Amino acid sequence: MDALDLPALKAQWVAVLDDLEVANRAAWLAMFDGRLMRVTDELVVLDFSDATKMAGTHTFERARRPLFLTALSDSIERVTGRRLAVEVVADTDVPHT
Image 1: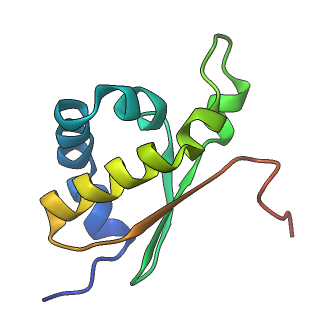
Image 2: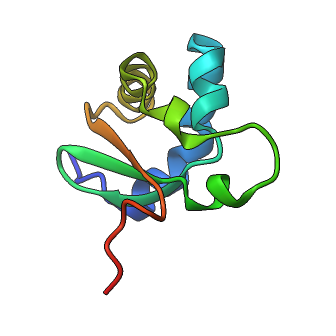
């Protein structure tokens, strides 16, 4: 099986989000505006920096709920065949170099 890198996951991301919407709409609402930041053999990191700048009620803190992280991980596995943990970060979490 080929490695699942960032470009490969980006190519399948719409399908992952579609699967998540069907499986757990609340998780989809919390996760849909996260941007893929990094993919390793074991982990997907979503960046919610833009979500924190938008006017409205969305907050990336909802995306940190363990149930939602697991739901997204499940959707990634169903679409890609790979089980990856999910981590969410925002602008304030990412060290600036």
